[in-house]
Structures are given as structure tokens and as C-alpha cells.
Length: 220
Image 1 (cartoon, rainbow, N blue to C red):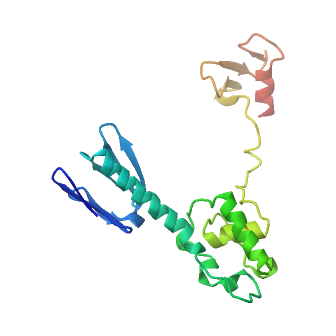
Image 2 (image 1 turned 180 degrees about the horizontal axis):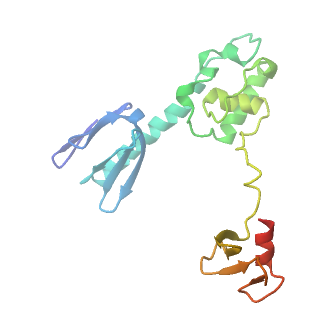
């Protein structure tokens, strides 16, 4: 469709968006849209650049957002349009290449739970749920195959590894400032700090002889 907007001619199709002289690209290259004050449309591109398009009417903005929404929906739902064989046997990969790991879809949004549930139920209903024959889902991949395979195999999303150091809760930050002299500070409130001396006449500026600041230094 072509829509005039001032000196601009907006051209919107199922595959592309053209708003001369600001932008002309395919929807596949667009990561997101947002609107700022004054009907200024900001188009974020996947190459980390962005285009600013002023002077659009409300109707034009609605058309652009609707077209982008349709493209996203087709990109997510498109791989589901496979046909099941009349007498299916074997694992899920008999459904063809649409149900194989696809690196190009590795960052797809998570499928809605109801969609994922319907897919897995359909696969099992047709006797295609032999999970032992399925390749494992790739870690952190959210392509359609990996999401479905993960659901069939009962796997949770992979968790990031946490080191032992990350599991230690810091109460105080400790820094040596001199011979046997240490600065003990609150990691949340930089204005709270104490000086601890571990030489003869052990002590802390908090004036307590057996305070947590001294223990923190000794334990560090």
C-alpha cells in the first residue's frame, strides 16, 4: 500500500517498509518500533542503528505497527504450518526440516504456553513423541525445534552456572590501607566505614573491642 505523508510516500508490504527519505528495509531487519512525543517513530534495526521518522499521522503509525505485528506473528507461527503424515511412525523429525534445530531462529521469542502445549500434545497423539530418538535441544536456543524438544524431553531452560564466590554474601568490603591497618566499608552505603588495626592495641574506630568489623578483617 502507498500512503502520502507530507513529502513522504509510505510503502508497506508483508516483507518491507519504505518511508523515503528516512528508511527503506525489510521487516526482517527491524528489531523493534517505539513512538516518542510528537508522533516521532523510532525504528530500531538489528545492526544496532536506528531511524527516526517524523511527521506521521496516527493512521499511518497504526498501519506500520500493525504490519510489524503481522510480520512477527508470521515469523513465529510460520514454522508450525507442517502437515502430519496420514500414518506417522518414528520420532518427531519425520515432520521434516521445519522440526529440526534452526540456528537462524535461535533468538525467537518463547512460544506461548498454550501453543507449546498444543504442539507437544499433537506430536504425542500421532505417535511421534519418541524422545529417545531426538537430538538434545541446543543450550539457550529458542528456535521452534529446541523449544518443542525441550518440552517433550521435560527439560527446564538451562541455568547459568554460579561459582562458589558468587554464593558468598558480602557484608563488608575490606581494603588494606597501611601496615596492619584496614578500611572496612559498607558495600551498600559508602558513607559507612571503619578503620581496623590488627597490631598491638587491636581495635576499631567503632570503639568496640569485639566488633563485627574486626571479625570481618580476620575472616578475610
